[in-house]
Image (cartoon, rainbow, N blue to C red; front, side, top):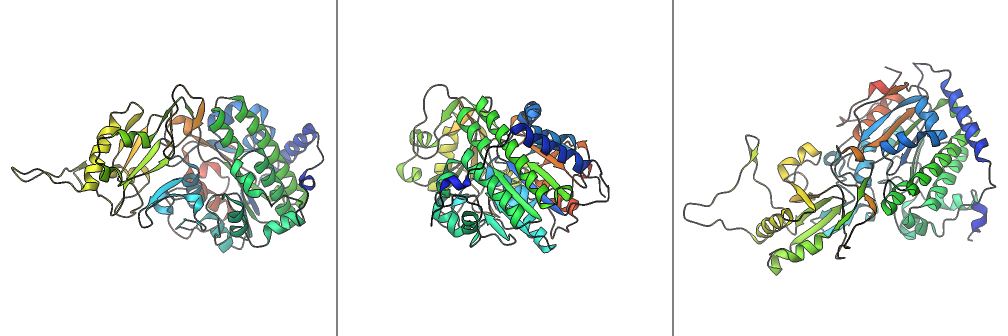
Length: 483
């Protein structure tokens, strides 16, 4: 039986009352800090696409986030490369760069399947390393995740609805029976959740908020991961400087406050550690570029053109060839070596090598292309090596940070754009995300140099968990009031 949509709607509450109660609880929870105290419960919230610059400038209009910032540790957070949602969330959860956790971006070319894969298409997590929910579970915590990437059928989660697209995928990849409970007991619409997930807007964030409130009050997970998406969607559509993303963040701030009220009703607010993160900041995009159009214009033979595969991750265009990967010669004394033909003979290239050489040369002539990342640079960017992971590309073309990359075979629109995006190098200042940690065991401090890969080990130290293997990240002790 499909429950009426009206049951999911709540009676309106005066905003001032909600915010005032939230702020009062936040101050109360932080008024009696014990340096040796650890949280008994933890809430990790990802606000997708929240740039540190936006949070810093908009904070006066965000009473819930402002109270958390004023009573805890906070600072800019450097994401991973490519600066994409799925790669970043994998790093946040595992403490590892893409080379270690297995999530190379939002898209990658699967050589074995000869298919450009969007990571959310897989019906099970791609993570190949322990995630924070698994570590928590090993230490006796109950765990839940709502719309968090890479949680489809993930081990270590008691309750989860993953971030996937399509109604059937949500029904088959969520915890068995959970959607039915959310419909029957919380009055949430689940029959068209796939449509809401595809829109990634306010209605999906509203659904996530109400699902979180129900989970907190009915299941009381000790660890809850929650993902809000509308700020990212609005920033893509209108550009990060527009008023629409600002409105979106103000609504998410209200929703976060209502989630914290649920912890108060559950009687665990004063024992709750709250961590707010984001996966990346945002870039203003003013011009478009189509890799497919560039490939058609490049001087490749038809057979060579048929070997090329693009996996587009924002400004990072992964360029691969079908078949075995074409490996770059190993570096010699820090510099890549170049194959040389025997005296008097021309160097004979394979069709794949020829295609890559021609396309690389052509792309570098395009004004929208800033440069090429070669294989010998992958390790320093956290991508490892093509020898170790054949799903990495032969090279990565980097667009200028103001250029939108067009997926598929659509032509690039002409003229000036107004849009937002990400994918560019993680050190670029507009792409810095946000980190906030508040509650028992958190120190009031401005944290510098926080990275996505530092979040999981820092949370583990806060909770007293032993991480089962080395991580690329480190504990940010300046955020903690415990040893």
